[in-house]
Amino acid sequence: MEFKHKSVLLEETIENLNIKPDGVYVDGTLGGAGHASEIAARLTKGGHLYGIDQDEDAIETATKRLEIYKDRVTIIRDNYENAVGRLKELGVNGADGILLDLGVSSYQLDEAKRGFSYRTDTALDMRMDRRQSLTAREIVNTYSEGELFKVIRDYGEDRFAKNIAKHIVQAREKEPIETTFQLNDIIRAAIPAKMRAEGGHPSKRTFQAIRIECNRELDVLRDSIDGMIDFLNPGGRFAIITFHSLEDRIVKTAFKQAQDPCICPPDFPQCVCGRVSKGHVVGRKPILPGEEELEENSRSKSAKLRVFEKI
Image (cartoon, rainbow, N blue to C red; front, side, top):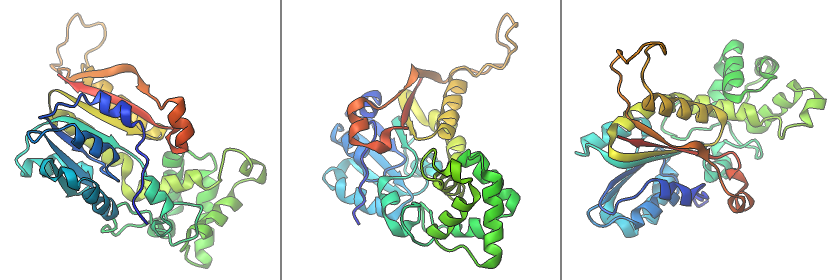
């Protein structure tokens, strides 16, 4: 199956990156290279794009798609949390723009064998990087009831997290939970029938939670933002597209702290903490998809783009 992914907020992202033809740009979530190809097309031979992704299928597809720009593109297989370190190893000391398009791609959801979707019956996997050992199967079968409850509550924001965790532990005592549909049945049984008719598929929140845990998605995001802001050249911009409230909250908070880092009490006549602003958030509110994009791509409905500009 070809790695396909409809790039969300494509025009808005490219516009907000303020691309300079001779600039250095980083796409930390390369995917199918939808955003990357638009960035590369705007660069001259003096400019360069570094594309990073941990998914081998994404790397293969992006390499083919960006072949025509190979003189100005370098592709790296890694998690974006290691982007700054990897780039410094290559002699790159700053970027004029950085992009993160978070979450799971359309390809990963639609490719049954990856085990991301609750809509097809396959082995529980959910690894974005199949070189790692931790899988969704291991989480479901080895985490304690308390650990499962915390994951589903915190990352899935599911009000039935406690009951779902309890049902998972009870079910695996009889036999290991191996497939997505096995897990679906367990989740369905843990949610009252009246509630199952509301709010979409009953497995949606739990699958999201397990995927986030498996790939350390929120920890990676939280730990990467400051370092990436520091890596920007003066005037450089950092664009992040999020797809659920947990990611957006992290980005919003990190950008605000980078803009207003002072921790002095508000009644102090002047700042004495010595923390200096790194730049400013572009726009008062996040950028959302327009009506046309929402009609064309249903997966864009929860997308939010936030942008930070370095001083």
